[in-house]
Picture 1 (cartoon, rainbow, N blue to C red):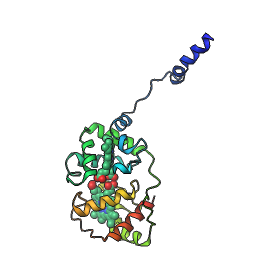
Picture 2 (cartoon, helix red, strand yellow):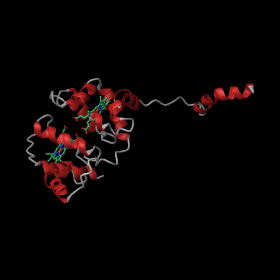
Picture 3 (spheres, protein in one colour):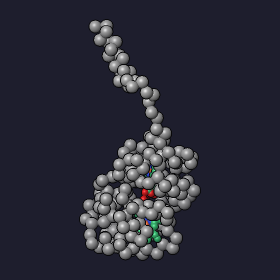
Picture 4 (cartoon, rainbow, N blue to C red):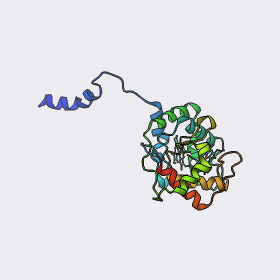
Length: 199
Ligand code: HEC
Ligand code: HEC
């Protein structure tokens, strides 16, 4: 009886320390857990009600770029950009070292596989807009272009993309120098549906 209780008491210890190795700590995960998970979830899939997109699997150079932009008032600068402002407050708390570690962790998370949440079916129109107006920068497979600082469009949800397209056209966020992408509402919806259906 006494022995049984003893072994029960020590069972967790035995299991955790079985290999005699110290528990590994991952700084990137810890920074993510303490600063990001409340809105982006442990999986990095985001919470739509918080306007927080899925970021899992984004390349770390892009994550660093954006965290710096939020910090430097190059994104989330408009008073009416509430989602941008919310994220800006979080980016401001990070130093360069934390940015590097957290980016590595986010890059390692498996990407979102269901990004088309608005259920707009992908159309030929969407594909045509992409090929004519977006492919030269965002790439044949939406993979982006690191040397030009162009993000992949394979990780984030449609509702988030729609808001970014609105932000670009209203000046709440800068798309690229000399942005002349004048698209109709219908073209924007079509291209976003096509993009968010593509893996
Ligand atoms: C309080 C909620 C909240 C927290 C906490 C938060 N975020 Fe965000 N995050 C957002 C929102 C909202 C957006 C969308 C901003 C927009 O629409 O421009 C966002 C956007 C982003 C983006 C831009 C994605 C893209 O495709 O451009 C990155 C990267 C990001 N967050 C990383 C982080 C990291 C890293 C942390 C932790 C250090 C974090 N976030 C913490 C709410 C949050
Ligand atoms: C001249 C190059 C160029 C073209 C053409 C272009 N983009 Fe972009 N795009 C960029 C760059 C650079 C960024 C990153 C902006 C930043 O750092 O905030 C971007 C960012 C985006 C984002 C934000 C992604 C995110 O995760 O927040 C979306 C959405 C987007 N582009 C959609 C499009 C669509 C749709 C088209 C075609 C209709 C298009 N882009 C054409 C260069 C381009």
